[in-house]
Amino acid sequence: DIQMTQSPSSVSASVGDRVTITCRATQGFSSWLAWYQQKPGKAPKLLIYAASSLQSGVPSRFSGSGSGTDFALTISSLQPEDFATYYCQQANSFPLTFGGGTKVEI
Amino acid sequence: QVQLVESGGGVVQPGRSLRLSCAASGFTFSTYAMHWVRQAPGKGLEWVARISYDGNDKDYADSVKGRFTISRDNSKNTLFLQMNSLRAEDTAVFYCARDGIAAARSAFDIWGQGTMVTVS
Image (cartoon, rainbow over all chains, first blue to last red):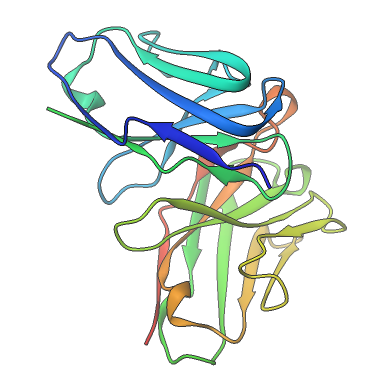
């Protein structure tokens, strides 16, 4: 099974900050990686798929990068609505697995 | 609009069974693979099971293999999760999710609102 490790587990930031979250896999794969945003009491929302493709309707301040074992999600200028928990997920092989999450706090 | 609505959650005793349903609307259900994903209270996301668009292929997390069964009825646009031999550690919000296509395959592009299952 591919294990996904996110870091940091939490980050404190301010509106306007640039924030980068990383995700490391125990086995390398090409670009089958997705990123999700989840707000309290809500279902997750797909932000990025195929490591760097922006899901329709997602603001362009979100971007994804990486391949192999190391991936990153960057928020270029943090907005008030971006305070949430973010998860990476490998879509390369079953069982599909998620990272442990990164909480972005004010 | 594209929508997934789960139902069937509740409180159940350990060892008992429960069946979850997920009603799909706003898209051609029969052409998409579907998944169940769960989230224990205060914890992260855990993928549970996946079924192909036609129901012929199924995959499960090790934690539920042999106890849970995913199925679908394309004539009724509905996804199911039959959960047997439930354990306390199965307590979670269960989400159904649509599989992305092409470059987004095995990512989850549409989610339901979730249904809570409490095993106690």
